[in-house]
Image (tube, rainbow, N blue to C red; front, side, top):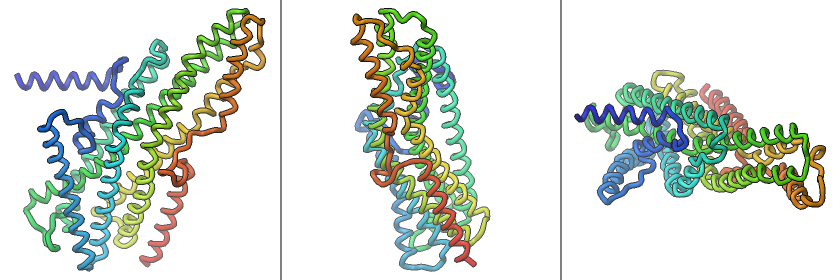
Length: 407
């Protein structure tokens, strides 16, 4: 009976993540991993809340153990590689804690954004929009599951190599390893789960940006369809202006909603991007120091993977923002292609007010085309692909300096 229930639940879950409907939740898989990696959970009772905080305290104990190890290393400095290992892990843990705190602080806002993006009423009868949403839904779910599978493989590899062979990653007291191999395996798995916590925290934000881009693409495609239908319309009689106003109104409402919610998204992305940018730079510094000092080995490959993950996240963050910041320009470009300056002439005094209304709307949107939606690193610098290029340039300069220093 129990196995039948598990089988039914499994098929139901697979159906939910593989078949798109108007009620589909784009964040369904994310919510599961948020609980697994102790990022967020809506506890309903005092018992759930107690278990949740007890679960989170396990990660807190791991963090405190590295704080203690860092204190011990600073007062008993011996090996530069050991010190780099411990300091690097402590900084990584601190970055994860900052990211989780930011997400928890802004989670009510994020839930409102998720509710907005899960509302598929705009263009619900448009076959192209339905297809795009369905493709995105299936592709995103597969991608999130793949990322978590890769993270699981990294946990196994790290536990089998670094944790079991390097004392720096073992549970220690006064510089001496304590506990047998079962304790060290559990300690190593929880340590690497911080990596999954970092990746999941980034996925939460990146998924929001990707769905915003999807909805922007649907809006632009809908406006293009409207422009083509207006271009093929030969009769510019009195009913024309009533017709275009009715057809244009839902798209303008959607544009306004997207702009309002993008402004809210900035409150989440800004501090996350700040932590992402500077933690990436410091983690790369630590990894470059280890590679320059001790070369590439079965132990240091984990650092290469970590550096790659941080750089990849920074790239996707900047790219995701780049896709959102020019919303007004892209809408204005599409609407300018309507040929409204040639076709949309006033057909009489009866609908002159409608004519002026549509013309004023087009002119306002076109005039605001140069006003981008600015995303910044918590108020310091602007997020763009240029900032990612600067990060790569600084990282390369740092690696070159450390290689010369190692010689």
